[in-house]
Image 1 (cartoon, one colour):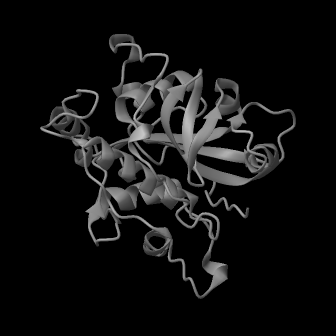
Image 2 (cartoon, rainbow, N blue to C red):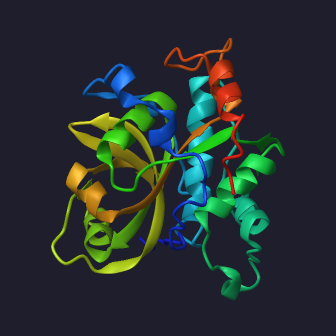
Length: 254
């Protein structure tokens, strides 16, 4: 199976609001050992990431798929939708392979904040705020996945992890002498068996260990969007309107 990457190098500080500055984990209930709502999505879709380097677009669309499912809604997505968004965000031209240059994640976050990604029905899906996590901090990742769902994880992808995926070994752990083959954007959605469960290349089967995450992660972001709310609350019972109002006081997307 042909698989593509496509995340450009991280730009630390491009997203102004830091997760650690806004979220005090000492005052929050500790997430349970097992959690996640990934079972609400039956088919994630590879979203063209086997043909083009649109992993960051696929990551973002997977998040909107999950958030809408949490609110009891479905959105139409496909390879064609992913490629359309890849073109809108990066200028990719399907008729010119040289334009398949990948995606800068902070620039994509800004686009999602100002324009929103389009689904198959032509509806736009925006984020209301973005928070930058400390790369490789597994505790922050755990809290972000539990309280915000759909966390973007940027990793320096190793050949060892690629080989493991191709061989259906779906645990990505710290490796000795990683052979880095590029950057990859994936979606953190749940915690199972002590590992972060992520969405990539259309599957929700991959678990990233704390040691693997610490070694490979070079950027990570949590998001808030009103589209995940139902009667003003998200699926975890958080008052989304108040949270969004607090976050929008800050100009946090560069």
